[in-house]
Structures are given as C-alpha cells and as structure tokens.
Image (cartoon, rainbow, N blue to C red; front, side, top):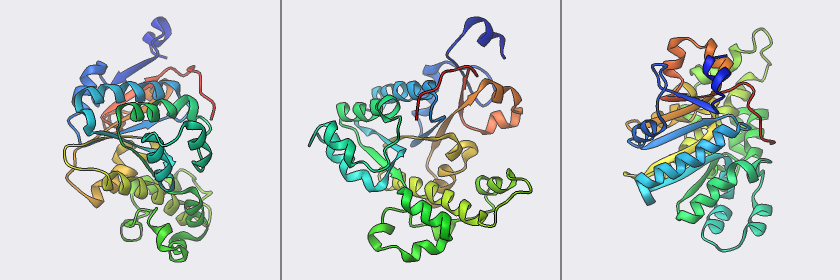
Length: 280
C-alpha cells in the first residue's frame, strides 16, 4: 500500500499516463477537448460513481447543452421510456417498472446521473444491447442474428457481422485468461461480448454530432487499453478524438508495469483496497 493511502487516507488518487499524480481540474480541461470520453468504472465502487457525477457537472460547465451521456447500464430497447422520463412525461414511479433489466444499484449509483441529465435537459442514451439478444448470441453465435426481426436487429450494432474479429486483443484475452480450460463455445462468448461493445459504439456514434461531448459510463473492461467500445468506434468511424478514464484498486496499480499504466487509459483513478462497496 502506498504511504499516502496508509497515512493520509485519501479517497482516491488520480494519475496520468506517465504514472504521475494530477489535479482533477487539469484532467477535466484535458478530457473536455475530446469528442467522446469513456469512463471505465468498477460497478460497485462508490468513488467511481461519485466522480462520474462530479465529472458530469464539470463537463457541463464547459460544454453546456453539447454534453450528453451514454451508459452500458441501460439497454437500447429502453430508450423511449428514458426519453419520456427525461422530458417530464411522468414521474419516476412510472418509469422504473418500464425499464427492463434495471440494475440493482440504480438508486445509489446511476439515478444521480439520470436526474442531472433531466435537470439540465441533456440527452441520456441507452447504448447497450438488450440482454436477451446477448444471451442468444452467447448460445448460438452470430447465427442468432439471422433469427431476429428487423425491429430486434435495430437494437443491435449493425456492424457486428462485418467487423467482429476474435483475434483482437480484448476478445483474444478472454480465451487466453482461461488457460487450458477454454470452453467449446468460446467463440460464442467472445461474440456476445463483442455484441455489447459494438452496440454501445453504434448508439454512441448514432447520437453524436460535431461539437458534442459524449460522457459514456461502462465497466472498465469495455474501454481499457482502447479496446472494447473504443476499438469499435475507431473501426466504424475513425478520426474522432476519444479520451478515457479508468478505475483500479491500489493493489492492481502497484502490480502494473509502466507500459500498462501508460496505455490502460488517459487517466486512472486509483482507489484504496479497503474501499467499501455499493450493493448491486
């Protein structure tokens, strides 16, 4: 454990790609120059969620109505309900039962972001593939797409069949990390993961216009090392300026090489190992 964590008990430390500590405002000023910023969280880490809402406020001060949000935690099929709620058509008690597969930690971890978007009249995009379709792909592979209706396919990134490559780092590592226990349906598992990344990239791009700033929230494994969603965005529409921030525990950070620290993201939030967790 670093001496700072041991003695001063900071909630987090913020590092750049050179492994040097940086100030929050410097990070904000730098990241705001991008077209899109991907915030890789640990789903039950309270520091991730606190910094997400703080960054949302800071970016709004700089970008105003040009700021919009996207999130893995909302499936594309829920966009209409989310839009209606943001527009004030009905209160939360009507919205929540209509959102399918709502995450258990919505109230503590994601509601503040949705409410901020509502207050400031900002767009909030439900970017993820509906879970039922990811499960079909996991079971049947790419062939599952041929069984779906045009309405269903409209909720999935359309470039999946054309661009999916299981040798890409993010997906190849899924197999390599299993060592000698790679299951026979490994390709399907990789394809299902890619379907999530591709769909989140697709809806991020579909809702982006020049001059916008997208702040997207996702599990860190969906954006670390410019993989996952970021890889798909660069593949579908190269040339956008993309920034990233990720979350790691102190014990993980201490084990990382200089190269890993330099490439995992533009900025890294290092959190004390003993940090309490939210409930999902």
